[in-house]
Length: 317
Image (cartoon, rainbow, N blue to C red; front, side):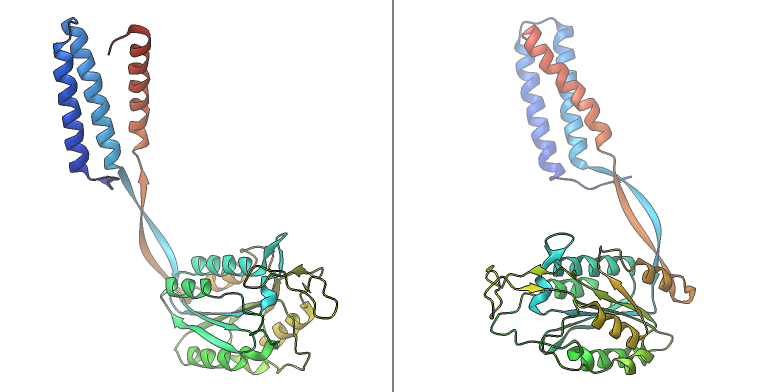
């Protein structure tokens, strides 16, 4: 058992002592029977004591053994073109919301791994080389923003090829390393040109998935100012539709599965596959704290109700 105070115990202790002293002073001066005064002082003292204990926030330590993945590099390749903000994820949410939830879920499920992040639109950028600093990678994910209309000049799905090759080659140089790739996109190839094959990268990849974002029906988009994007030819609201054929083609070239982004847990089968390879497992003790202060809230509530009843029905404390 240990404590994690909510407010300064010294401050609360002094305040409780002053209130208790004042209550005793005024109660003693009242013309009540001795036993009534003693009972009142005892009740209020107990109330203040319970408040002091609750403020200490007593907690119980719980030790858990957590499995970590010590020999795994996980690379996220994220399409950050403006269509990734089309609103057709789980109804009318932006696709990028689902991407962020997915990445956070994977990183939580694969603790101990090194994580890397690449984003691409009309050019690729390595936002985070492989690192064990998960918070840094999550911060980088949050920094991916809707590109400006002026900046959005079309893209192809092979834009990230060189950046992927750079990080995958660096991972392959590490001894006994497994490399997992999550390629996340809606599959739209807006420049309408033949994309480079990803087949040469498959030799660096142990496991992973190409993850398709969006729907065949499509979703409307807003720009960085919150205004609807319109089709330049028809002037109707522009609609982005996912292209699963392109994504399945890339999955085949990389030698990994294709998965549709339906929820953050859609690639749990990949995580389970990696965790089943015992050679990459490590263990660490995790300390969790369980609150126990609520046990003191119950008698405090009873005493407060009692005091309220005495004030209302008896006209005294």
